[in-house]
Image 1 (cartoon, rainbow, N blue to C red):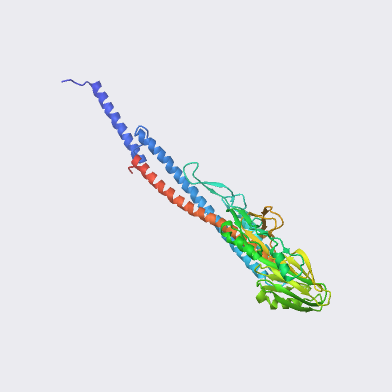
Image 2 (cartoon, rainbow, N blue to C red):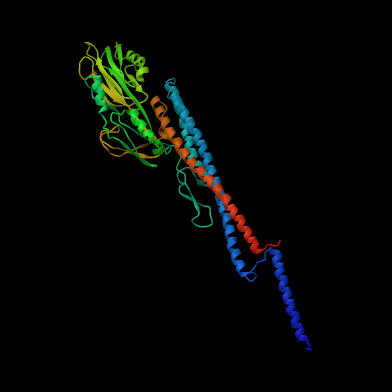
Length: 463
């Protein structure tokens, strides 16, 4: 039997003691950290995997925070736009109120005062809405990246156009005011009107949603043209309205007799005795007496020396066969645009001659959209002008609307409608971003929970 000397015994005890001490230190470290793997020596492969999982979990938590912050930012934008929408709706209400002749000039001035204050508030909201010192609605918050994942390309792009009064409005394009030169008879004036525009004068609309064609037949009136544009409005985003307006004056007192045609293809006879060129009430009353057939209404100008006629649906208006008996007097007809401006040529209809006693007026079509667009006529003879050049819609903004006149109030409605559509478009975009961010947070949270579970399994927490 081999004996163990004291030196060997001491070495064995020391080795056992060191081993026990190492085991004790490892146990104490695991107890203090709650983890099985605390160094590469504990589990080299497990340490590598746990390190990657730890980075993923930490990155996921940061992405969740980013998404939550972005969600709060989107909610801030939405809240501001809700108030802007409320203001625009109030402005439209005031526009409708101002367009009624029950208001005096002073009344319209007071309405404009409120609109001015509302416009100022829209500008304040646009310039002062911010999140974490970042302006959101002044046009500088564009094409921003929100990191919503753990990789560099996992981003949500977010941006908002400016919402101040110089940006909100409608892109509008009006047709030209057209009337035919004085002709011999009611029928010939109507024939000349039908030949005014070519049958191939279709209109190509190019905008945000693509390129579309509004097809218009020969002899189409403003109402037909507007209907053609509205048929494709669901695709083009461009809405059309039509209105026919003209102003009548007389050169001398006489008994005027003439035919009037509007909505109905059958003309109505108008006869009115005018005793003074500064009071055309008789003509106004005679036209209104047949408005059920023609769809044409008449109103005196403020000085009563003129009569403004309106065909609200956009039908052509034919005024023919003017006679004044033996009295040398003329009926002067001038086409007007939608805003009441005398843009057309004055047509002088000779009442005591057999020639040049008839004319016809084409209505105005107004195209409107919240997005920019162009229109290209297919033929030089078209309702927009005398060539086939591409026409670009003008941007009419709420900063320039005026309710001090009836015509201005009427135009303001369409401009405000465009502004409302702009805000609705932004809110729709923010709503989509809100829903996506909420889904992103839910998904990231799920991934983070499962990654943490895997990390815990590998590290084998013991506490």
